[in-house]
Length: 282
Image (spheres, rainbow, N blue to C red):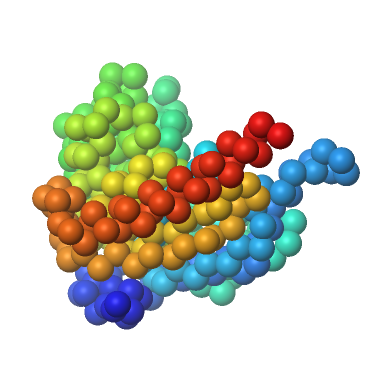
């Protein structure tokens, strides 16, 4: 099997030159991270001794049964959750709090309802003291929403609101884009459109992406690597390279290599889901 990091870097080097920050930024190192909620008898270990290394520009998806700690792990990279043990670093810098170097896209659209689409996208750059309007225009064009710039979030469909969320996250020029089931609430057709749109944006922007999902097909279609987490307490139990050619079109889901990866993922997740079910019924 090809070395995923090496082959990916070779394929995307011309694209990553377009990044507005220094080339080869976006290295994520999760080192023996554990997360514990509560204290004493009520303590619950959500994530246990987990280590991951994500190369600059990689697109990595995390799969696992419900409640396994996927979102919790993502939130340690975002800086929203402090590990009980271990550490998270981005480009060698210890993560201790949220920062603009890590853009976050949630499942819920989390836009400011009183601001227009353009104002939402411009918010981060404006706070940073940058020329926010041209930046907002650039990213609205990138997600195909220029003509909706003066609309309010309530006037947009779910898929369009999520595109605004992606544009807003990218407008800060993050080194890492963190996505927590961003397409989970969308219908199947819109979801597929959003997946293709995200891959086009990622190819143009070249940032590192860490993407949480429950959908096996989505993970394989998007990712360079698929990580699978165990039942709670969550830890990485599989790291699968996705050696499918890029750019990817929906037809790739009919390829034998796609089906084999899907079989491996489903087998692992089913076993862990059964463990999770047994834990809940003890």
